[in-house]
Image (cartoon, rainbow, N blue to C red):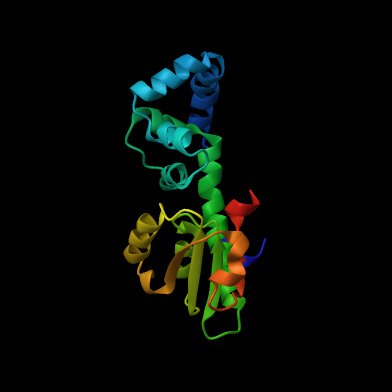
Amino acid sequence: MTDWQESIEFESIGPLRRFFKLAVFHPFANYLPAPIMRWLLKVTESELAAANWKDPGGWRSMVISYEGKPTQIADKILVGTGSVPTALRNRKKLGSALIAHLIEQVPADNAHVLCLGAGPGLIIIDALKSTDHPAHATLVDISDEAFEYGQSKAAEHGVSDRVKYIRGDVRDIQTILDEPPQVVKMIGICE
C-alpha cells in the first residue's frame, strides 16, 4: 500500500458485531419469510428499506448507509451489522482518498473533477475538502433530486463554491461540459 492508502481508517466488523450478525441477525433475516420481513420493516418505519423500495441503490439509501447514524431501530441493526453498509462506508473513504490523491497529481492550477452519476456527490465533496490542491468539480446526474442535499453538504464542508451540479444524461457529456476534466469519477455508473 502507498502512504495515502495507509492513512485511511477503514471500518471493520468487530467480534461482538460479528457474533450478533451470526447468532441473531442472519438466522432472523435468512429464515423469516420475506412478506413478514417486509411487514416488519414497514411497521418499524425503516427509512433504509423505504428508500430502497422507492429507488433501489438510490442516493437516499446510500446516504443512510454512508452516515451510519440512522434513528429507527431496524435501520440501526441493518446499517450497524450489515456488511454492505460497512463496505459502502469503506468505499466512500477509499474513493474520497483516491480522488484527493489524483487531484494532487494534476499539474494544473485548478484541477477539474468530473463526477458522473453523482447523486449528492459526497465522495467528491470529501475529496475536495481533504486536499489543499486547488480543484473544482462538475457533478452530473440524470436526476437533480439529490442536488439540494449535496449542496447543503458542500456548504457544510466549505466547498460549495467549488462544486457545480448539472442535471443531464452522462451519455451527452460532451454537450454538458464547459471544460475538459483532469479527473473523472464514475463509481456508481460502473457499478
